[in-house]
Picture 1: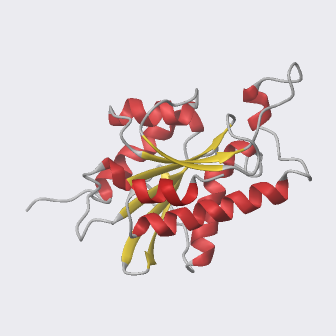
Picture 2: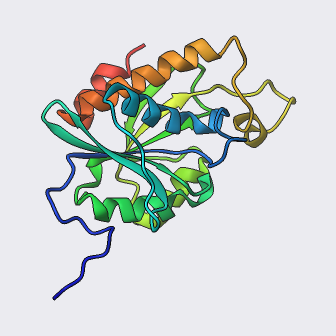
Amino acid sequence: MVRRSPEERTGSPADLLVVGLGNPGEEYAQTRHNAGAWVIDELVRRHGGRLRRGRRDFAAVDELRIGSHRVAVAIPSTYMNESGKAVVPLVRRFGIDDLSRLVIVHDELDLPVGRLKVKFGGGLAGNNGLKSVRASLRSDEFARIRIGVGKPESGTMSGADYVLRRPTRREKPDIDTTVSGAADAIEFLAGSDIESAMNRFNGG
């Protein structure tokens, strides 16, 4: 008898796997770098799910039913720069053979607060989470949803320090709106393709 590991898929593959990047622990939970994780929390809230982490998992995971589609969602329990350690087992577990059905959600310094971009492949803009995912998958041919968090004022602090701080009270409503928009984009992607999602959500 062949024994399957807990990470092997025994049923039908998921239609979409969405991973929201961030850092673990309460000290980071409300910082800008965890914007990707906030989107997963929003999806789970909307669809009555519950994230769970198994003993061998490197992520908290749930499967949601969005329309007629099965969408796996996850927040890595690794630090941002080791995100690939969580993503690779998830890709195997949920049978994602076509990486266009993998969506990585992350904060983006190069977008102003309140902006959202859907993207496929291409550059990583210095994001260490994306670098880790690319290195682990040996590919950058996956979808991304970029949550604009803006940049620090010139000379005030580094980008690395900036993303590890909480949004200001003024920024928070716009970021919350963007997080909601990102959840909308994922719901759309569940039953559509990346080109259609880019056309619909990248305007403005």
